[in-house]
Length: 381
Image 1: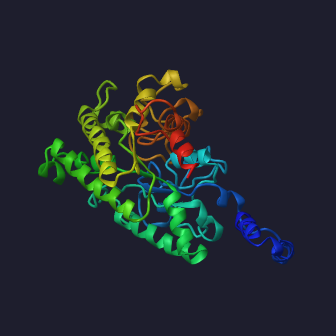
Image 2: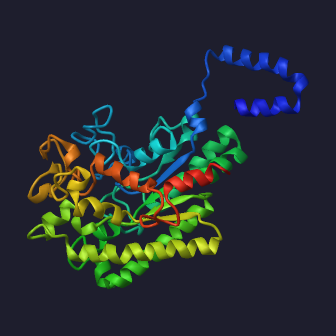
């Protein structure tokens, strides 16, 4: 806002002195500056996807896919559950730090209003997938089409506050993260033997189908104004403690799920390249989260972990069965576990993943550019 006044002063220097006193008088009458400098200065950030990036939307829904009870959040600054499927911070939180911003609020949070709207919003919902039938066992979750409807609703709320032109500019200049796809395998194709989708498609054909549907989602995001989108692939699906507990005999990763990830991630990268070519701009950035996580899964000691097979919180083999609850086994030191619960990385692992987002030089993890390059490039606009 101060920049706006300075611009006005440059155009009308003779009025500068009187305007200064008018502006100061307004601020004094208000009692204090009610505008959040950090919210205005930092780039807006929007998040779409599943439980890997949900930061509390499901808390407001009547669903079993929730992380609103202890020991979730045990290492969060408040030491209380927030709805994040983590012992503390998740990937969006660490990206917000890189942007120099506070964490985005869940879209369903009643606190998301006023100046908080300028920070962005998190629309993610645990249990969802690219396909609408994914996660059918979880009722009342925010599927992708509805996340996009909320995004449109958000933009209307934003325009009502700062004007349509400024709202469009904020959205166009924002960073967007979309993390979805893992549940389409874990909670759909491989959920039960002979699932409806596995009877309908061979695995290679299913992957092609899911990729084609993902492309539609990304195209819709572009229509809604997103111009810089981080698109994550799946992690090493067969190596999470839940799959080790259910499918492994000697701690080896589940071969069928690993094959799914090996088929999905290269095709996702190829699809992103093709979509960028159609648009004529590098709007979408493919993020190889499988490779990022493989680094600490195959060599946990190199990253300060003692294990990448056993979850910190859970029960049964590898602490991989059931949910993380107050009755679960709980490790005393979360920093030496790559996985917090049967499916989700620990806070420390999430931080490592985002450091790899920032890693400069190589396009091994991200294509066509890493987050450091994105931030430098977009700062010139």
